[in-house]
Image 1: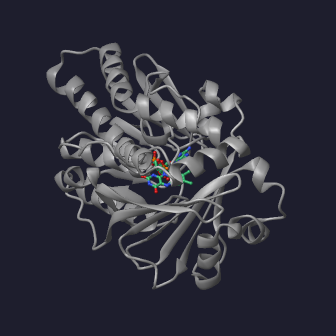
Image 2: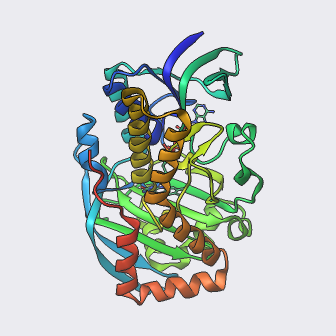
Image 3: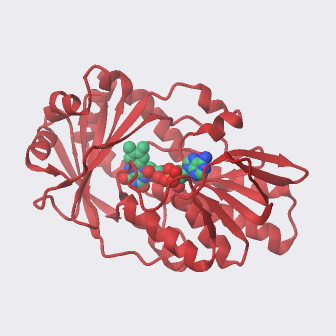
Length: 373
Ligand SMILES: Cc1cc2nc3c(=O)[nH]c(=O)nc-3n(C[C@H](O)[C@H](O)[C@H](O)COP(=O)(O)OP(=O)(O)OC[C@H]3O[C@@H](n4cnc5c(N)ncnc54)[C@H](O)[C@@H]3O)c2cc1C
């Protein structure tokens, strides 16, 4: 049985960030990730600039990317509003971003296993992390960074897993050279909204979130795009002019924005495993990276100072996590109630498209502060 200081389950942004941070402090770290790198992921691929100094501190060199300083918001009827993005962000595909962090983790000596974890048990003050093969790994700490929802949540009996998750998301890259390099566009349609922005390759990422109730009325993605999405004139123009670069769009279902606990069964949850925010209400990627930082700092404080016991570390992480993210996630859940009601959704998007003041407030609240290293 292999022994590690920290085992990280899930090698997405949160898991790899924590691995790099902890490995830099000389801990024995293992990451378990189900899928080989690199791979595409369903995501809007707009990253808030707040993460840049911290990534630099971790020694992650970002490639040349498009910088976004403008946002366009439109509603189905074509009304639109432009706003500046004061902090701004950049466009980087998850294919490249996750791979970049993976390579940095390997360079530092993180043990990365491309294997799925199917159980995490806490006994006698240590963790036993089990794979399908029956093989087990031991560690002092486990960081749960396995994303939005999975079999592990069922095994842990997490309460959100029982609740309905009425959202699905669709994403693909498109070729459309005329799309502005500095713009993030958010377009509303019946039952959802989608984002458009350029990635590092020059491809435009189109990623949308839609309620099942709205999506299931159509026969599939092609029909949904043609009959619902194309009612928004901006999206109609995009779909007519752009050429899809993926063979098939990627989809994910059962997306849950329900409340989760940042620590469960002594596992320190990071990124979406601790809580997923509506993309309209926050930058999930920056939150994933930030949560990995505070988890790594808490674990380091435990080992280095010897002042805390496990419950104090857990309390510290829980408190910090709530302080940083609970308000944004609460806002996201209020938004969910509005977006799931077609009349309220149209009304509220209409109000947004007419209110620069509210849009500016929303932009301010969806971006955090620069993450200090
Ligand atoms: C439609 C949509 C659009 C979005 N757009 C944006 C955006 O534009 N900007 C932004 O900042 N955020 C956006 N987000 C949020 C963002 O995608 C997430 O917050 C971010 O991916 C969280 O990273 P993570 O590391 O927590 O999870 P993930 O990136 O999902 O990583 C989890 C990893 O765990 C692995 N895994 C799962 N189960 C196991 C297991 N049992 N064993 C081993 N490995 C496992 C998975 O393969 C995966 O690689 C969007 C979200 C959605 C749904």
